[in-house]
Length: 211
Ligand code: B1M
Image 1 (cartoon, protein in one colour):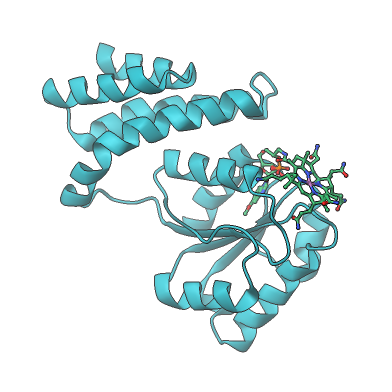
Image 2: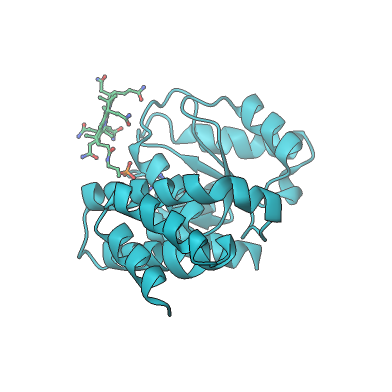
């Protein structure tokens, strides 16, 4: 891999936001395509972050800083990628369920997904079932991801799945759930297609779901 793309990946890993933005610009000036910089610089670096986070070698603050560095690189590439219509890994709709205001984990999942090349539509926090359903109809995502951090808001995930069924769109979208109190057993119980305990696994599962 070229030296500049390696530098982008390494600086992203270190969370060097400004350096990543500058190197991304420099790589474009050297003639690398936005797709190459995205895949072999930014996503390559973010994949390493995801692996090391999963292995317990990195912690949440370091992942957030790395994800912000990735965003800085993405900000440089985004207009060019839009022009060249780069192949997206898939569309992922995400939100924190009704009654729940926790969004740090959800944002981490979103940023890791973006790093992996997914086009993410983020509905924010306290998202009602009807809002999820309307967004599924509008954006036609491959995956709908719901986050919940409270035992009292977890049941809202089931409500959303039931609302998708009632609206006749349950079979049009894969449903992934996550958040500290959520378990694989709970995901299965409510009829979700996937559960991820952390952001790195969310990316792995998302890749499998769109295969
Ligand atoms: Co709240 N809170 N909080 N809180 N808060 C918890 C969750 C709690 C465990 C603290 C405690 O009592 N020990 C507790 C819940 C108890 C329970 O239900 N079992 C709690 C409570 C009770 C409350 C309030 C009710 C407190 C009150 O007002 N009395 C209140 C509720 C407000 C509401 O939502 N309606 C409340 C409020 C808040 C703040 C606003 C102050 C703040 C949130 C700020 C924000 O998010 N913008 C907050 C915080 C920060 C926490 C703790 C301290 C940290 C949560 C967090 O961000 N963790 C939390 C205690 C704790 O966890 N130590 C706590 C870091 C984050 C990276 O992890 O979100 O788990 P997490 O995400 C992980 C995975 O779960 C997974 O990937 C992420 C990265 O690996 N993941 C997904 C998450 N979503 C996923 C989705 C996926 C896949 C994976 O697919 C779609």
